[in-house]
Image (cartoon, rainbow, N blue to C red; front, side, top):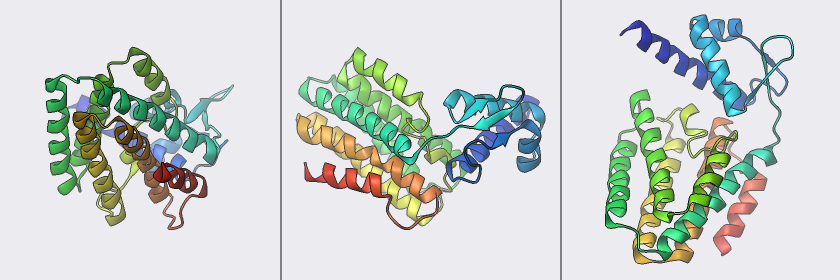
Length: 247
């Protein structure tokens, strides 16, 4: 492994590790985060630690302190789930628009191909490399969904939402231990939704396509619940999911 590869690997380890500490509440809002803390906690050098801090600040999980270092930004549970649902509403609209138009066969074939590749990855998902593969393919599916909608306005809106903390389709997947049985169940459910969304678009069933894409966003809430290692449902998102299932 070259020095560059080592730096990239350490940066990713520090980024995911620190992100996990913030998401699961180990590092509370307002907690100071510094390079030495990351170096000691994750066994990386200062350059990757610095890069991880910059990435998390760009993502919106950290804020630059006036004098030096960073601190964990404060977000309420409601903020988190509203960001997730806003993305779900927009992607639901993308699915509806796609189902209402004549999506090019090439785009649908690409979506089919990604779904099949995801089937394979989910079936054998246990390692970090497969986790990276899942994240890449999941991003590609959501990109193709937007492409199928053929809406520049939606593309601009989703870009802004994905830049918010917790707004990305993979916001919590990257921090999960993927050989955990409960995680695998959520991934399988998400994969079934991927397939059903494509089928609805192909069939021109815009109402169901929109509802499925909206429901699909709730997977992010379930990932967060698993990260927090809680068995009880999260009240705010549970109520939203119940309402969506009634439509």
